[in-house]
Length: 348
Image (cartoon, rainbow, N blue to C red; front, top):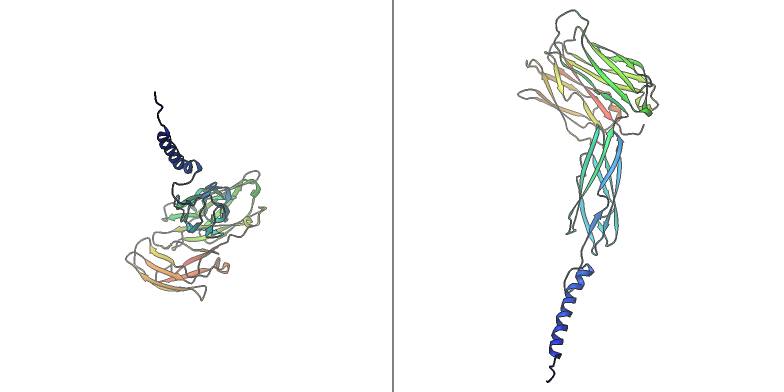
């Protein structure tokens, strides 16, 4: 029996095997199929969530993210989304070479924050795989000396019946961390119409302040503060101020009740306030006296209130404790005071 020539079959089989190897080899090598050498970017950050832990309220803690380019093509970072509203981000460079790294420094302003917080950011780049790389800052803000409430507002108070000297009482609980424990050594009341007294527990971890609203109420209501002197080992808590407010039904009040700014505020920021009467009787604003010649004020009547706009409030601690005086034609309340408060982030 004559032998068959298998050379043609062998050539076809070899061709099929060679083609299969040519197709599969790039896949096993981890690159894309193509006729040329493929390039791809690969921006990554490990970990993507930075836990700041427990952080004191009023501080500006910092976090460091390291961005890695794990691809074989450069990555261009266009910006950081979410770096606003008290959060700042500084990127070491915009272009990250293959195999390279880049620092991303982030800080968050925790003034007025208490309890858990979370801040989401996105790194915007030309990485086709993940053009918006999500990052997150988490933590828990605490007050070393926590006042609950931080101010005393009796609200709108009528004169009431009876002859009792005290009209209303409010309690302020003061809780300290062990390294900030103190005793209140003196209580000073600044303003008329209320008194205060303080008791403390053994060890100085808790103090209780009781504020008494007295008869008769002034026609314009009560606006003042309580200054606590303490033996706290941290200097910034040796004097604590607690605002006290009470309004009568006929009183004019301003909302918000104070001008607040900090070292991060811009001088050209607009501050807007509304002046209203609780009994809704009409009145006129006749002038605004400012404590700084660089400040300007404008005012106009709306359907429900007088609107006051302030500009040029410089971010200076010298204005802390000063007042803006608003003049009105209301009998018994010819002057409405608008306090100025400056927030400092300096370390204790």
